[in-house]
Length: 250
Image (cartoon, rainbow, N blue to C red):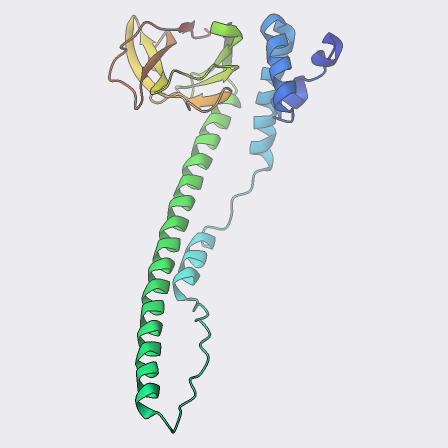
């Protein structure tokens, strides 16, 4: 893959349309090519603006209608072949009937339990989807803010980090690419730098090498941010030296 080809990949990279191999090649190239890195960032911001411009919210009553139907629509029961009563062995027929009744009752109980389990799983999935949508909307709002300002820097092992700050929203987004996975049992934790005092700003996903994260909490008077490696679940205060420190754009 030539350098000329890599220069043309900024749009596809911004829209996550590259293969893993192509994305890796572009990220290595962008680490040394400020123009491509800046163009990819600007295209991401533009994509976020376009997404907000054409987004359409579902009707407010749609969810309540769907959830109400889930609890009222009758499920098809199991098909049970009718027993043929033998006139020559009434005792055996009655015994089979009792076994059939017990099997039906057990099936109804199991089916009811499965229905409740499926309903709970659906509720969990819906809540996770809502949380993901809220995070995406919040990130897009910061990136698309009219006063959004960006600052980028190289991180360890060829990774790159970009922070986007909106003073009007009092929020910041950290965009990482090419991040190495943290050690087993560890996680990357983000911090606001309040004049040398580090304030927790949330955790990164340990399973992703590229991620956009909305920093938790208000920017307030923070002058920058830092990244440390912490035990799974995070820490109340840093327990290790920062692997990166970034100054917020003016």
